[in-house]
Amino acid sequence: MKKLYTLFTALVFMTINAQTTVNFTAEEGFSNAALYTQDGWDSSFTGTTWMVDTSIGAITLSNDWQRAAWEQGFSVSGAGESITFRVDLKFIGTFGTNNNPLLKIGFSSSSDVANSTPPANVVFLRTASYNTQLQLGNNANSGPLSPNASLVIADCQATGESDDLAVLVTLTLGTDATSSTISSKLMNLTDGTETVIGSYTGINSNVYSAATTNIYGFIHAQTLTTTGSNAITQVQVSSVTMTQGDYLYSVVNQYGSSTSSSTNRINNYGQIGSGNLFVNKNGKIISY
Image (cartoon, one colour):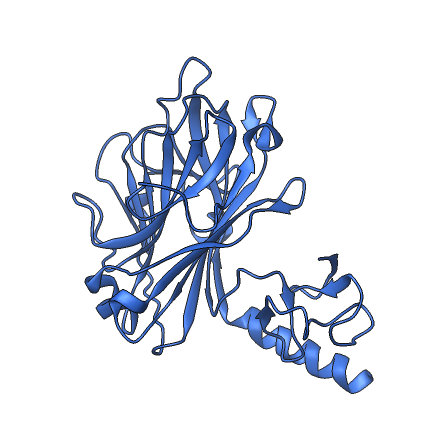
């Protein structure tokens, strides 16, 4: 048992080291200015673009259609391998208009977003189903992911702002662009709930070609602030994380890897597969 815990601890430590996180703080070298003026980032070159606010440790936006890209390139080694982009965020205001796309989040083949939108594969974070769902939509925003990955909007709305949320998007390379997959889930960090994992298969050929050399974390506001009389007035992104591997699943197996399998999860006693309390990828005990 002790050996299993020791092995698990070592594997979790290595897994954490495979993550790269940015928190937009002064300690990280950020200043209160447009995002495109900061080292390692690009954004729409306008007067109403993404801004850094080090007092809250976030990038903020109060305008529609503005792009942001992490200029650090990441790669996937080949077919069957995955990479996960996580964006932690909240909205200021109240969710309004039905079927409204708020943001799209995912991977782009270029980090040059100052004046144009590069080829990208994304999920849309949107209001849907007569304003009852906060939902993840497919790359064209023509429908939900499959299966429908959504949370009840009322459960995500606090007074004058949303709960703390996170969108995780995983790219898994296939043998070609048409067999590659985007998978995603939405998490409510305030109440600990999360959606099912939804996905679509088939990605842009430029994204596929770039994936083994350099792809980039990409965020693109949509009709963010046009949500009725109780409008969203701002989005705040408090951190972004890029992780090698599929990190959509919350629990780990005996090898320290995230897993969806009910037969090889590590429980709170270091055993495999039994009970309903398990070890998550941060080494904490959770109910699953």
